[in-house]
Image (cartoon, rainbow, N blue to C red; front, side, top):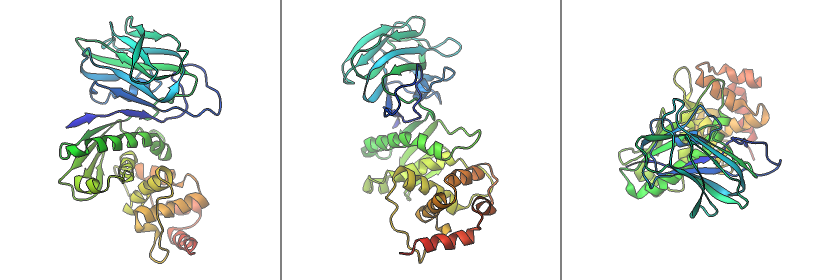
Length: 352
């Protein structure tokens, strides 16, 4: 079956509304949960991205049981909340629904109603775990343009909105696992995009993750689609990093030009093993390793260059491949040494 899962915000410490919070406070990530399916690429995270030009659009009219809920990882005091609904053309507004709050994320109480598609909730004296919009029964699909919060601790907006759509038709027993994996990849999405940022690039908003019995490898990516092996992940459920690796491939978005396979996989494993799960790379054998070994080996090579020559070398190499201007000579431009020299130097550094 196809399932649109929850979205997790781990972006920069920017509030959708209001003054900056106290320095040094740890951000509180937020999760969006909703019973309403997404229409096209107007995904749920767009309702909390700090921009009024974007919005979440539901696929079907709402029912009395539907909701759109922002759940905070830890309790926060909400000083003010404004929810604006409706598309820019005025359609899809909520009238007759309500805004609610919950101290425990389970029991909710009403804060305010909607007038002409907008509601303003009163300040909460006690910490809350969730803010919920109940649209009520509607005759047309709704749109939620922005939920603006002012809180005592920073609740980051979604700087790189994304929604994973998972298909576990081939393995319903992996449904919960796949949903958890997709949430993990959503959490990692801001970090991946920060590491691989380049001018003018906008990452995909929707990524489709399918678990397939027919696929015989571990996992693979084509454009914005990821496929994973039922057989492999049934027996290796802890290898979530493999799916983070594939999510990196989605963000790489190489379409044309020269892109050596060893470097493509090396960049992806660099993000995985040196940013997502550092310390899990394992030992690299200096007798057999070379920079173009791919995957973990090439990731270790890139980490060496990052530490010694340029902390942004991975981002620069990725941008060159993304823009179809990569050549091996780029390494010499960035480090002053060609690949042969760098390879020998790195291998020497691996010696005990």
